[in-house]
Image 1 (cartoon, helix red, strand yellow):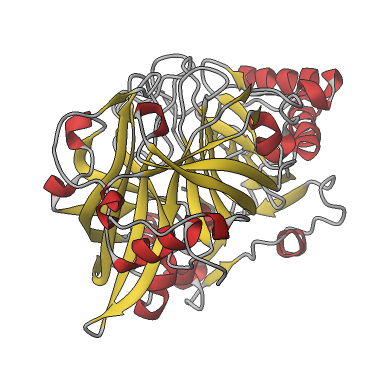
Image 2: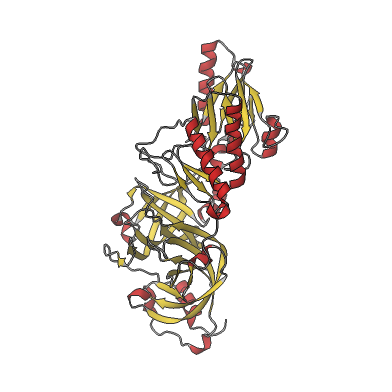
Length: 518
């Protein structure tokens, strides 16, 4: 965040990534700085108007707005294109250039640069010759939501600088995500970043970005790609990239099957590797049907539920699935790991419930240092036990570096064992959101630190969360664990039950393969 002073107005660029007045008293801090400035300049606070504006409309840049809204001598600029255009008098978005006067001597130029986000703007301070670019250019990953708009914006920004013969002392973005090692960034949501790259970039970096975008634009949609530079990584959103080659990654792709409290729905987790054709960590929700229920018998030994469930589809293209061109597929269902002598039960059909929640390509060439233990969560059930809410989650370990481990755990959360700034009635909705990412403070990404029954109760921090939510999780079971880079070997570190034999799973097990028509 940046605070620019004039003798009449003060500009705060972005309000922060946290809502809490307690853990993040951003207004109090800003007002303390303003009052000190007033004392030094022999000014009265009421003589200065504070304007809170934003580089763009993402939560980690606007979360502190509520602390400023309705306060004396303060205006909070809205976050839509219409709000920004109206306040800064941009008559023709995104081609107009606005001017915001802090006083008679200090002017700030407002340059619309949509692409990272629709309402993105840059600020050029004529007094310091600093260019503030938000998330559109920074030492880190440059996420692009609209590629064509971003190409035009960066070109316009560069033209604005050069056509006006402006000097740029430094380009200041809103994050530091790169390490001091060229082309290497920290994991998303990292809370510990030793040996950071310096914040300030130069006009040369803006030229680098512009040249890269122009070359990709001229090459055409099918040639768009991530691009790695020493100080930043161009990373277009998947929707802005070409689809994967049709019928590519053809193989027998195994999955772990994870039942839900809704009997006809399951999560399926792809069994990944660090090499093609299996180089994706992928989680999907699917609806299960079985056309031949009358030809099978009920099992007599339900202890078989102490094993994991796996499915082996027919030979098909993972690329077609990633591109969204598959709606259903058939698979063999096994009790236990089909690669290690699991028991075949029957053939089932799975209807994919889009959108897919987790799609991560395992790129062996990307290095992410200082990786904390990280899991993504997927709702199993939300129930009331003894008048208390009990949330059951599947936790999928996030694979990022090699060697690594692929593991799924089953955990529970009692919302009353969470500290958070969100209202309690909204907390359950927040915790049950599928695809949540969790870090575990004090636990590095090591096999011995993974979440197993022996972990007991662990403290988990919800990442990318403006409410600073931290919860106690009870680890019920580890459902599966294999070791990479090819994830063939089991994790022989702890011994414990690998599957829950509750009546819920028993019912679903019978339903999948053996029960007569419902």
